[in-house]
Image (tube, rainbow, N blue to C red):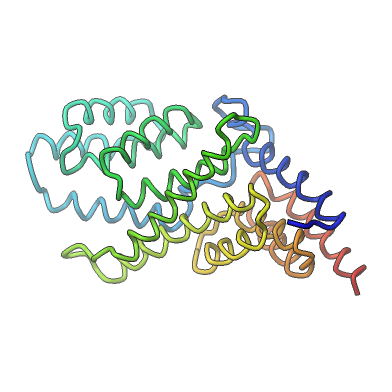
Length: 287
């Protein structure tokens, strides 16, 4: 891809900021939060997470299967989301029921819990185990493809392969969502919310994959879709969307994207304010 001098200057800076400002605690493999506050790009705030939880709750209320299994899963499901007790109960459940009716949901929740605790090695371990058993699990596919490009390290030997994997996961998630039939007893509105939310996560993941590859046109298209219908959008999506548009010399649109990011409290808010001002100046200079 041919780049202008401005693009050459901006793209590495954007990647650097994403790697450190968005993942200050993940980059070093440590838990906790950075001086800038908690990592702002948490999938827990996105619509797909809540809709997936609602679907799980609906399934639990049906009380299907072995009562002991139901009780064990409910204990895990209802435990504190970020607590060690939840992880202990999840591991115990999967040891006893490795591939039964609630196991896919257990892998989803356990993987999410590890991600929320900033434990990426364990996240990858259990998301991969879950997908090996349930390769069409939409939530695990979308979540895994969403995390990989956000925790991306270009210096790793298999960095490009990880991006390829994330892209494949998200495309498969979208394929499965397109084919998915509404579960019996689930309200139409709730099912629609689930699909819209998971699609937003998948398109967000693809947007980050293409941004890491410096495919700004493709990244912009995916992130426009990801942010279109989200009531609780990820500020990272607006941040990277702004970087895409800036690299494409669409400065006024970049300013708008950065301003939308700047309205959301979090670790990238101050950077978005600065980049919005910079984009506005470039738009003025281009006239």
